[in-house]
Length: 447
Ligand SMILES: [Zn+2]
Image (cartoon, rainbow, N blue to C red; front, side):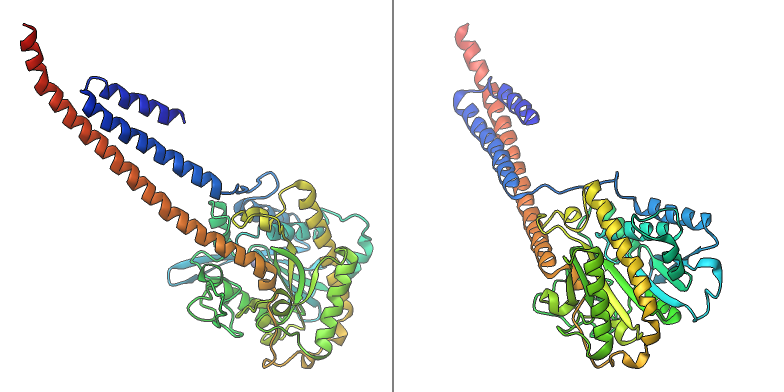
């Protein structure tokens, strides 16, 4: 407001020495000029909604989080090890960090132990998931403890486990979010890493939106996905969990169709999820196939691939938090807790759920036979996509379109202002010339 008022006074000073008929037009144009500001501001205020910035008191930056994880690993070489592997595709670089937990470092490379593969941060905007990865690793290392947990019992379970954690699968996308694009979920070159897998890849539903779901140029076109695929094939996990946020749900295959697999594998997975939901999440999570539960299908997802192709007996997508009341553009708030109480509750509840998952999973290991796993011709509905949430995603898509429209209107307004400004200046120059040409006449008459 102050800036505009100063400009207005400036222009009035110019016009005060001009003849009346000349000074009137610039004055009106100046009024129009400032009226355009008023209209623009009024409209902007009416359509924009507040966007919550990243709360750096609660959340690490990606760099700080990876440094903390590395330091944690170095403090516990008896339990933890870390690898950072660069990968590349057509000039696009990605860097993947994997932490391996194995107590006593015995038989960690063999296949005798129960194996769990966890991925966090596949979508850039879901910061809370990578914080959960750090919390779980801190608990596994015994630097942090969960209340009401018998550590001795937990350690008995952990003795027979190897857990691989990818704490930030989409580091490049995460950096875009940290740079201010709070709604970005894709990787550093615009591909959704949870649509880039080969099961039913590339199929587009009627509501397909490339901003959210771009599957890439081909299955496994992205170095991040290539890496995860290789890791899953070499590690042969018994349990896979793809951890997301956007809602609260425990999903099992399938994402690309609205059914779950037939037979005992499906029953076993559902039973596991129901126990976790009841024990740790107050039965508030949605349980079922991603595709069936959310009302839309997701094609080319990681969990469908893990179940159908890698033959992981228990493949899940967990959605750990969502704020359904957040506005469509307020993505940090929509996908991440913004207060410390909720932040800690989410991390504690889900850490406890994961410890129970490890325990129950191990108990079931004897009952796991690859033959039980559904054949690749069977299909499911999306887990992750469900989590990211059909409703949430659609609202975001709509929000993005509105932003584009708003940008166009801003440009038009800017041009309009420039046009008015140049008109005023031309009018002023014109009137100045008239003033000069009339002065000698007046002087002559006064003599
Ligand atoms: Zn997600």
